[in-house]
Length: 421
Image (cartoon, rainbow, N blue to C red):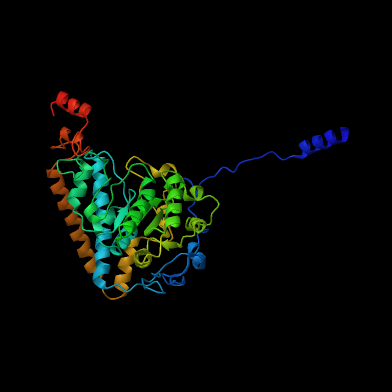
């Protein structure tokens, strides 16, 4: 007995105390931006599998980076899409409109014309290129930086601005936070202020599409930070189990509101490898390369449309602006980090490609810039004639009670009568 107690005592003396790893962002204010540990494949070297290839046979695509445009603007490699100049110019225009729209709406927030706004600066190629690969009867379940889905789909800018202003022409009649749009006809499901919920809802919509025998597909969108929510993992499991016709998109723009993606990613090499645990085809793509976005989106949409199941895609990009109009990114990341981003600016890269192909000139680009600015300015003028947050008519208080219940409960009818509405 004494020997046994002595053994326990000795073991306790040599035991190492347990510790936890405390994740920390790799770069903070005052640090020199460093993306040297980021895996960036050379343009054109990543293979393009057949859409029928099994998920198990394409594991390497989750750690490589699919790129089409080289540094000179040439489209190279097996992912280079067959796309005409007119569509490329349309894509360039849509991205430029989105950026100017964001600039003006952010300024409008600073002028107290709206209470809140979120920009997508630097990320425009992803939603634009993806929308071009979809049909009008497909559905997107977006997060709050996918305004390009609406703009590329032809949704009126003045109505988007009216929703931001909560004015008399707000399509949602003041019931949503600014920038949380909704347009079924444009394939844009109502945005949710609760992050990650839309990821699981999208899988449900895709399952319903299959149950009805439709051939319309669904796209889900989530940010790197929101992927830590349980809805993300539930959506991945449901999509995998039922082989739903859905494309699961994760936007890795390097930062949640103040947390680096390196913290949220955990010990995984990339976000894309998370898909392997669910048996999903998983790809990692240069999100600042419009041609790569369009090519991969078309590939994934074809898989879903041919009833070959879901695809998980990590789009690698950078959030140039603040997380929102309420955020100051200089408090948690170096001011010079955006300039050091190695994948460049999506608008400049597509412009370079068009010029390199002989289909575009600097003069044409300057002319387009002028037209885009005028288009957005005129739309803003129209929206502001209908009112802003601080001036002009807004939605009626009656809207609180309407279009919510098919049969309005008695207590709400009573409250409406008491309010004189």
